[in-house]
Amino acid sequence: MAADDKREIDTGQNVSDDENENGQQQQAGTKKSKLPLIIILIVFLFLIAGGAAGAYFFFLKPNPQSAEVKPAAVEQPKTIVFFPMEPFIVNLLDNETERYLKVTMQVELSEQRTVDELRRLNPMLRDTILDLLTSKTYREMIDPLGKQRLRDEIATRLNMILDHNKGRVNKVYFTEFVIQ
Image (cartoon, rainbow, N blue to C red; front, side, top):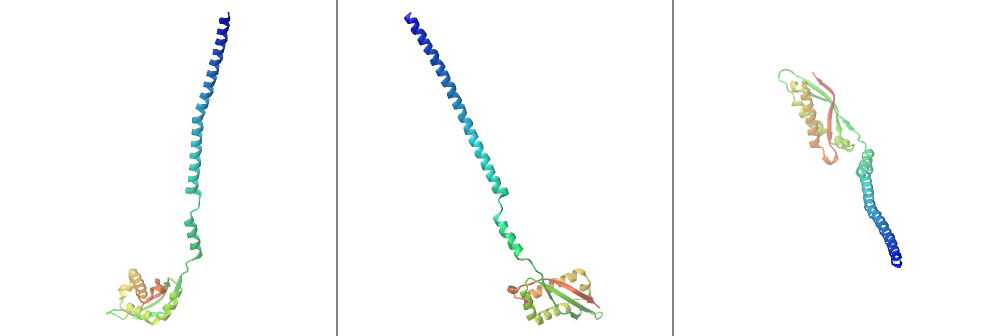
């Protein structure tokens, strides 16, 4: 009987040992299954944080270059400077009849300081324009393209005389244009 009691005790111990081993295996199994879940969760959180940081830098963060350019554009408003010239009355180059051309113009300048340069060089500028106007014919002056070419030629000739460091003529405007 003593042997039977020992077996029961051993069997009882075996049963409790089996239960302990199964319980430990279950706990170890749950610990092992939680570790990959935690790793996946951490990686997922890093991806979300990286995406949020990227979105901030690409879409929400102000561009420092554009911030610098805008005030510069606001600080320097472009002003248009005009210089009126006295009227020109010339004979057109026509063999058939005598034709006269009266032109009053204003020139658009790139800078305010160019006005002083034009006043200083006025006799030379007027002579250049008179030479150009007397070389034109009646047919050239009636044509709208001829008038546009004349504007361009006057601007080109005036810019050749002006010192480029002191500005330039951007455009020529006719305020009066009469052919008789």
